[in-house]
Image 1 (cartoon, rainbow, N blue to C red):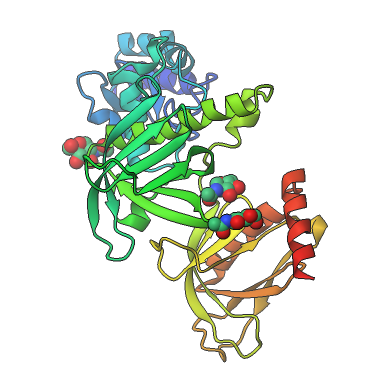
Image 2 (image 1 turned 30 degrees about the vertical axis):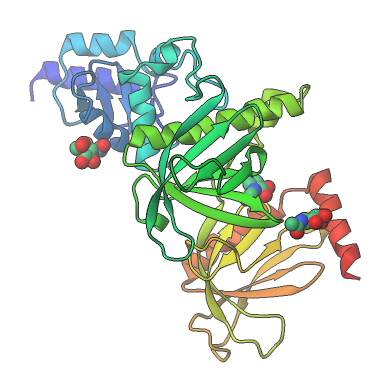
Length: 378
Ligand SMILES: *[C@@H]1O[C@H](CO)[C@@H](O)[C@H](O)[C@H]1NC(C)=O
Ligand SMILES: *[C@@H]1O[C@H](CO)[C@@H](O)[C@H](O)[C@H]1NC(C)=O
Ligand SMILES: *[C@@H]1O[C@H](CO)[C@@H](O)[C@H](O)[C@H]1NC(C)=O
Ligand SMILES: [Zn+2]
């Protein structure tokens, strides 16, 4: 290696220590090992892979393996992640979902394309996907009972705060009218075995209902996802006019804390364990027979440890139909629940997820919901 090249590599290294450059420009993953010599940003390996597909705009190179010319280094020095952010993320709407390194491919790819290819956030006009407060289109929706996907027309309306869907394109009556403030939307490529798969969870007749949709076009499904967030944000701004934006953002859909299989037993000591799919959100542990079931078989409210909710590991012998013995008990004021996990690692992951929930104090709303439920029980 020439001395020049050696020196150039050192200069690149120094640049990665600069504020903003210590994390991937697009997903925030620490310690990026790649950079775009045309956009002047430092990137993680996954985002770099996405940039490769935008070869007209972005030329990516490894920081340690590739050859860096002096003018390219100067370019990186003059630009960098902070400058790129100021330029390409100047007008990202407050409700817009910014993916992290934990998010799925379609969210990351569309975020990167929106930034550099479509330059959506360099203009002041809002990019919420709603035209005069409405978004309409066709999504493929999984049938509740047969697991097949069918084209359905969806209409999101800001004015009445609803998401509706119609069986036939020309139908007058919607099959369902969903209140926008009861919706949670999360991407579920693995569970749905569909790269653009979106799970929409809402409340129907006091029960949590899951609906699974996708669109073949990645830009379109991400646009639906952000349009739902936009509609929810605007709806809540009207409902809670004095609440600060940050407060409202915490009410927008959040990713589930953890999902996966465990075994669970019933309330009687003789009840057998059954394998179930579990979904943990901010306060609830829901369980399903199949990961893509429309309705949960049941749910457990998880309050805080200071209000008597305790989570701890247990050793459970395989005598009640259970295949797994890495147990967990959750004690609530109503009942103690027993679960088993497939491995010790999996149990550790569930325990830390549960403790994340129980270590948070309950807010007033959650506290009164529990109190009134307990009163009904006695
Ligand atoms: C790049 O594009 C190809 C062809 O569309 C696609 O199959 C591949 O998944 C893309 N790679 C990334 C990392 O986005
Ligand atoms: C949506 O998520 C929030 C926070 O996790 C939760 O409180 C709410 O019950 C969820 N709503 C539905 C319909 O699942
Ligand atoms: C839902 O719950 C509320 C309050 O508990 C009750 O008044 C209402 O009748 C229930 N609705 C349905 C459809 O079960
Ligand atoms: Zn990244």
